[in-house]
Length: 373
Ligand SMILES: NC(=O)c1ccc[n+]([C@@H]2O[C@H](COP(=O)([O-])OP(=O)(O)OC[C@H]3O[C@@H](n4cnc5c(N)ncnc54)[C@H](O)[C@@H]3O)[C@@H](O)[C@H]2O)c1
Ligand SMILES: [Zn+2]
Image (cartoon, rainbow, N blue to C red; front, top):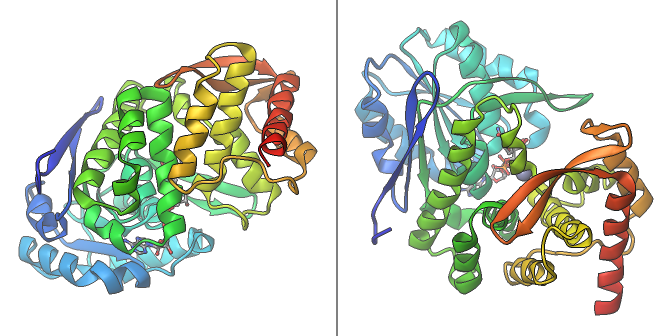
């Protein structure tokens, strides 16, 4: 990626294709990119107050220049607890009051929460209108804006109501990442490490080599990293649009990660922070069952550490509870769990393992920490 250059990633789906544009100064171009979609009706911009205060003006101005009128702006409250049907209703009403029609476009400006709920609104309004994602968190740029999963939470669990609705366009401006909190940024980096360690050793090496610039959030370097990550996810999505199987490799580190999030009541760890620990558990497991060598775990731990991510299970977490949460995971069948393991850095595969093997790997992680301290 040259200085200031934009990378365009084409995602070829069964029914149509769309582009992900990644660059270090793209928000002001969002209007032209949206206009290029053709037959443009009204534009509905969905965002939250935090993101609106930072980037609302530049995006509204850009969209106003592209559309026939200024976009209608719908603000939804900030936070995972608002990824609900009630928020969806607010979007529906604002869209219908603004005269949404089949040629309208919903633009989601924000992180994964805004993307998921605005995406589901776009999937269902008039049985589906076009969706443009303008992701402003690292997690949203490398993960949630790619792949077409949209939805909301229910008291019974996360993401239980939703639809596949592929975007028509994604505009990822890495300059927006400058204002993210360190924790949110780190949590996004964990997903980038996931792409490297499972699918792309060269990306992993880039992260190792340039961790300092990554921590300084160099927007050009981030554009390269986001583009590579989005390309890797898009490759998987192209081959498995509706999660028939292959797409499960994107869940590397997530079985233990989810269990850890759940056991700690979704308050102690951000999703990516839990995934970082889950990835180490999965790597440890891979080493134990012999799919990868002994060099992988230390290399992963060292990279996570350099990126400011915790890589070990803290001593006060109830291991049995984590193991039980893994066992309760929907993917467990007859005492066995489908697990994504590493064959080395940049190579992974799905294996069916016993819960005893998973438990032993978790116990091994505590041991690692105990000997290290
Ligand atoms: N659809 C998918 O495939 C998919 C994949 C992964 C995660 N998700 C979903 O994504 C959600 C998590 O997304 P997230 O991590 O982006 O969280 P988020 O959307 O809650 O954003 C995190 C925080 O950062 C703020 N923020 C956003 N952009 C900012 C910026 N540029 N500067 C400063 N602050 C900014 C937000 O207002 C929020 O407070 C979860 O609901 C998860 O289920 C969906
Ligand atoms: Zn994740």
